[in-house]
Length: 413
Image 1 (cartoon, rainbow, N blue to C red):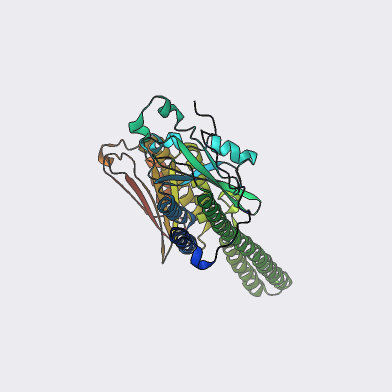
Image 2: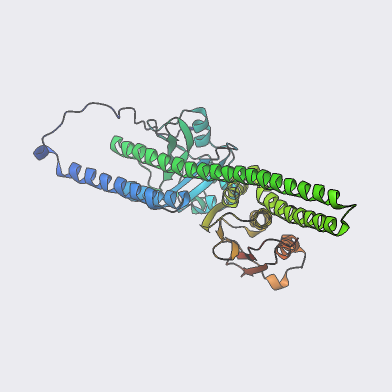
């Protein structure tokens, strides 16, 4: 009977073992060829991690290259959200039918994640264990659902001492990994950890820039209102002095004070709209969408990729409504679509902002859907407030696309 760690446990504890060096001419040709291949793979992974537009694509490319390196065609990556500490499925490759069902890939506890949480899984202690998620199907001998998979190598992802997640790789013809292969996997884990941390630092930089912009706006509001109030007071004082002797002149001063008051109120409303933080933790929209995607992935097991084409600062009212539309659309994906993956695309180039949510689920026939079904009423109302357009395209068996386009002049007052 296989144990929790399986019938094999592989360690890379001998990474630092000293081995006698051979003169170049005495290095076996097969060894030189393998080392050349490993260096080529590591260089390709480094290039992919450095050039990929986002973490998900970098992880997917890494899984493909690890498959090429080890001949293990199936893999998936768990990442831990740094705020909620929940795990979500960030990338996957060639999952067997049993794991393609999103409910199997939620962020619930499993053996590899338990060991990672406990600190028993480190880059120098890469483990081979039985897959607890596949175990029910393996026990039922449902090979058509597992494709013969039962074990996987779990590669922990760290940045320095910060735990980030776990990369699992496996294949039907399982074999024990060599010490050299484990060393290469440990190096890959370090590379991936650096790439993930770099992406998160970029998110933090964006958040800091947003906070600085809000502070600047607050200072401008303070200075502008102070100047306006001073001007209003001066005009009112002058009007009071002329009230008895020259009512016409007094009226002009009072009228000017009213004009400045109205202008100041309009400016204060615009500035306060920009300062509002309707999104979670006052985040910019791309960051809020990413956090939403991670949370829904952890709950539903659906892998959700957020793609930002262009996202300059948007009016707070626009950001808030687009976020709520995305939440409703993604909630529908998790509840009704029976999808395994979805993509959220945000493009705010030019004078319009466009938000699209696509999934690979079972789809439906929009013309046969009741008008109040699956949150469409709420989405249409929000789009109407923004004077935008909502388009829903869906074909049974071919997924669904929800597209929103809104002008950037701001919502209706």
